Length: 269
Image 1 (cartoon, rainbow, N blue to C red):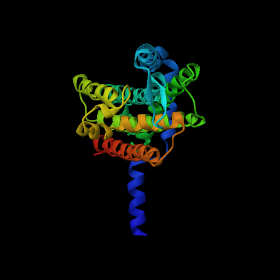
Image 2: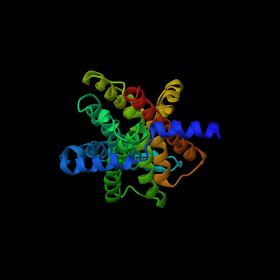
Image 3: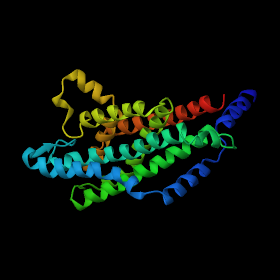
Image 4: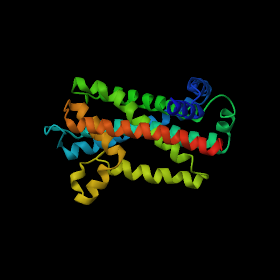
């Protein structure tokens, strides 16, 4: 009983049970902000799909999909770009947006002076990043439908999977941002994201790399998201599909907890 009481007190110290208040504030801000800024991140993967899938795809020809069947180059990169779109939406919202609130607006300090706990703030901000990732994912899925790149009923699961990917990246992105103190340090995030996008089998299979580099790529989160999306796009489900999904479940749980404990260390000393 005493151990249960200590656990309850520890949870109460970081979670006030009112993450909804943070989310409500987030939607009020979205309502009054420039929507052009918010949706701009959606177009990058769409332009990649048009330029690489339709343009370069005419030169590449057919490639081998995850089910071993030949598929068009556009159909090969589209699921990968959907995963990238979800990642971009989540990362941009959970890094630059959080950075401004943390270092300039001092918003989190004010929030934590109320009944809100660090977990409320973390869940609320991650949810808003998730919402942005959801918008990007749905929009890109519509583009895929229009282009005739959806060939399996399992592809409907690509949208909720995009949300799972967004949660994983948003939670880690917010935690990492809490350590950064200048705009120059924030640029490091882009230095990490661009190589991950280029080398995570988004535009070409990883078997073109040496074995050692393949292992490194397979440890990166975007590669798991890309592979998971490709499996769903063609309805090729296997044990590895569940493994990719589990990767993001673990990443999300650890990321949310890491963010909450980090905010507590920053503001509730």
